[in-house]
Image (tube, rainbow, N blue to C red; front, side, top):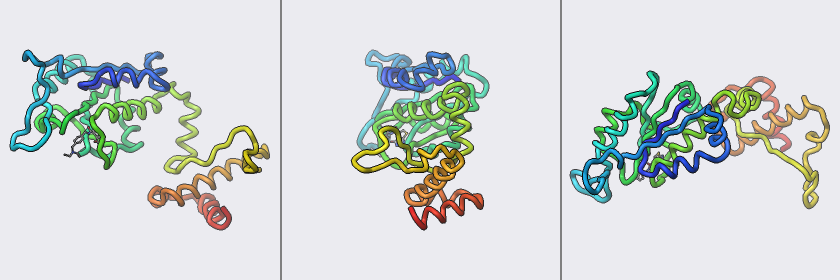
Length: 244
Ligand code: 9D3
């Protein structure tokens, strides 16, 4: 999959993407990441990418022309199923389902804004979609682009190893994770739950499902309301509410 990020801070995106899972995927050529700076598409002496908003008000707005020319330069050799996504507080809230859908594309162009936003006509004429991280304010679209790239990359074949992603899909889809423990067995008299040391794998799986259901019920009841539980899951959740 190919990612192209249009940004005034290309180094921020490139550097952060070099670590961890995304870095490995780039090394292994599962992912290609390119960055494009609107400043390189200006023609004036001062390389102006922003201007004052019509109608007044504080802050600056990113100009149409450098953004448009950057997208046009990119679209010359774009894949047919390529999408242009503007990251902004007004966008559709990002979800795992949205990432899943996008992971089927062969190319994604991500536009990271700065200042108060960009000229509305760029959105209307050049962008296919607008995505948001959620209802809070950050300073620009670069971190949002990195989150999108990270979230999609770990869904691609041969990135995490298919075993792990398949496991996550079938087993805890739509639920919070169960608690995890590693050595030592006891910390200041707090022991690891016995069942995890029992070697009984079906009991362990049942305990983990019960914990995942229980924690989701406690911490994110909104997620549980969206799910239909199997008879076994209903019974495990009842058990959790009784004792845990
Ligand atoms: C909503 C705040 N705006 C009030 C006038 C100003 C403003 C602040 C910060 C406009 C844009 C930004 C930059 N934010 C992003 O680029 C951004 C973002 C976000 O702030 N929240 C959630 N998701 C995203 S995706 C890109």
